[in-house]
Structures are given as structure tokens and as C-alpha cells.
Length: 200
Length: 320
Image (tube, rainbow over all chains, first blue to last red; front, top):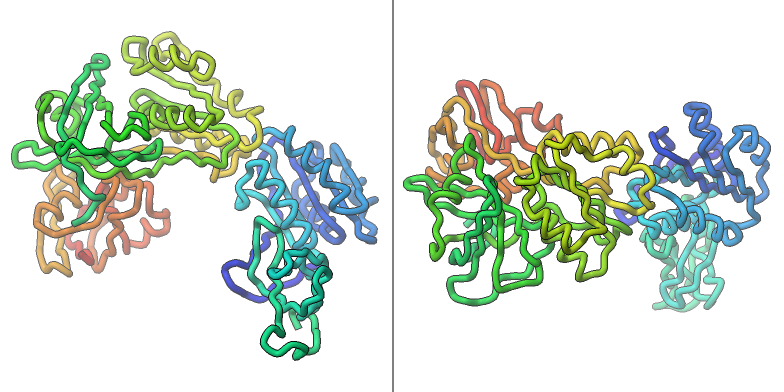
């Protein structure tokens, strides 16, 4: 099962939804890995909207491409990474008209970054549909050096830029599309708890 | 004291715009600067009409950055409760009046890539201020303005002279109408639509935009409701320990104020939510007319908006 029930948290923490069919003139999907399953599930409920759907998909080693292609979307782009897909995403949003519906699914890091692009293109974040699937790893910003570490699955973790031991907080920034990581051993250097899964 | 802070002003100019609409210019009595505001803001004008104090909201139409004066346009409503007739018939140049600080319940969303304005009749007034604000900011906007006839097209000449490319005017008597579905279709991503006009027009724009897949957050509207007359009823105000009678032609809020009870308010038109009041007990039925409460709240019998809503029945006890 690719879904996960996130425990209740502070207000800053994003709450992801589940895809609902929505009337519109065009549909843009951005998904990574198991995020494809959310698109496949929506297509079962609302197959007609695939005719005007543009899917930007980053497989991350999973094998959903054939199933997505079988939905016959108007466009399907399969990219090696989010960074590689970004020019296409930006160009699509730049050319888009009102009536476009944006659907984001997969990891929190992917949804957060694509949401930032869509919001910069003028769509209010509350009007963007999301559905979390797959990895619960987070995109983290070190509040000290500002470096981003992708796919953080354990807490605490070592900043991939400055090497500080960071505590994984639920404090989230939509602008950075990242959670905040704060030095855990500032008072007593070296006194670091054993890392464990974020939700363990 | 409830409501926004007050400003003492003098009427310095009254200009008939057409058969129905008259423009009023207010300057401070003390000669000082008025607060600047944001396009879409309104002021509540106090009218001392004999024994009755009327408080009516009007959109500010002057340049939001001009602190020397405010202007409003008042459409005469011969069948209304008398506020617009008072303004048209009783107010003279030189009169001193009290108005409220500007309150904005219809602001521009400055994140918009483009602002699409839809006005019906006197609903043009907030857009006049918003257009001045956007011209200063270099904003991207377009106006579609429906009027009954050329003779009743308030400010059409000024708009088409200054903004010929942005202004589109439609006259009912020439069977011209806004082609709304077509207009919404193809607007660039990030366009916000704003509508001010009669209720039917607002409902039409909201439902069409929704059907075309426009997010709720990008559809803005403003409609001030005037309180409607109704059967007189009695209310017990539990906190002030008073029983008051609400007359046929006054609102519940006005009756509460007449009894000397200070009740919160801002817009007096069912839009802002300030006057929301808890119901302690009731036997009868509510006539909810506001845009504020959710349908479930209206059905719950626990809340009322006294600025526009009424009650028919035996007992009503309010937490006021």
C-alpha cells in the first residue's frame, strides 16, 4: 500500500488531500514514483479527463509508465528527475489558461516544489489538488547553512552541506518547499540521539 | 463604540451624474488629510434623517492615494428605505456629516497576473478606485461594464476616454450582453475575476466561473444588501436585560442601537461578519438574508446577522 496516515501535527505542516474529479478545460499532473497510482485511481473514476491531460512523471525506479501510457493522456512526459522536468513544467504553466486543473501526487518534496511553481504561476495553493503516495522522506532545509537535503528519512540527520546534526521539524515553508532542520546538539556538541525513522 | 472609527467631514461638491446617480465629495471638517485606502473599500455614511439615524455603506470611487477628499456615487432608489433619497434630496453642499474610516471587503488580490472586472450599473464604483490603484502599480486589468442605457452609463465617457483599450461597455437597451463563457475561456493562468452588480449578475458570474473550472479563491464579489422590511417582532437582549421591539421598516441591528445597546458592525450589508450574534433561545423562524453564515449555521438556530436578517415568531433571546 502506497498510502500513509500522517499523525496530526502543528498548523504549519501541510495536509495532503486525495484527488477529486473537477471540471476544467485542461489537466496537468505532476507525479513521482507511487504518485502514479493516484492518477490511475482518478482515471478509473473520471476517465474522460485524460483526453485533455498532460502528465509529467518522474518514475524514481518504479514501473508505472506502461500503465500511465495506457490511459491515453494527451501528453505524457517521463523524466529522469524533478530538475530535468522543471523547464517543461514552467513552460506548461506559462502557456496555460484559466480552467487548468493541477494535480500533484507522490512524495512531499515533489508536491511541495511543483506547488511552488503553480502558485508562482498564479494558482492559489488551496486550489491545487494533492495526494501523498509512496515515500514519507522529506525535503529538508538546514536553517543554519540554508542548504537543502533531499529525501531525508531519518531523524536526526546530518546536513549534506554543513555537516551539522539536524532535528527534523514539522515546521514547513511553502516558499522553500521544505521542512526545517535545526541543530540538535548545539548546547552539548556530540550528544546526538540514535537516528530512527521520522514516524517511528 | 462599534463600527470603524468615525471622521467628521463636510460636503464640498454635489454633481448629478445622470438621472439616477449623484456624486458627493467629502473633505475633512478640520481641513486635514483623510486616510489613504485600497481600491474596493467602502465608507459607512451616517445620515441624520429626522428621528432616524441611517448608516449606509458606499464604495469609495476616488483615487485611493488622494488624501484631500473622498468621493462616492449614490444611485437613487425610490423604493428603498430612504437612505439614497435622503442623500439626493436633503444633503446640501456645506453640510457636515460623519463617515467611517474606509473598510475594504472587496480588495484586489495583488498576486493576480491579471484583473478581470465585471460591473453592472452602479457596481462600477469600487472598480473606479481599483483602476486608479492598478494604474499606479502598472497592473494588468480589463473592464466589462453592463449598463441599462447610454444615458444611465455612469462614468462610461471618462473610462472610455482614459482607458479605451481596457474598457468594454454593454448596453441592455441595445441588446448587448457580456459573452461571459467566452470571456472566461482563454484568460491567462493567474487571472482573478471581480464582480460587483445586482445579485443575479453575481450569481451568474460565480456559477459560470465555477463550471469553467475557476478556483473559488480567484472569483471575488461584493454585494451590499439593504435590510428588507418585515413583520415587527420582539427581542430580548439577555446581556443588557432589555426587551426591544423591531419595527417593520428597521433592521434588528438598528433596533438594538436605538435601544442604546452598543452592538458590533462594519458593513451593515450582510457581508463582513462583524455583527454575528449568538441566539440563546427562540421559538419561531429565522429569515436569514446574509452572505456570511454557512447554510448549516443558518439552519442551526444558534446565530443571526442582525444587520439584514429578521425573525418571525414568539420568542427570540440574543446574547447581546
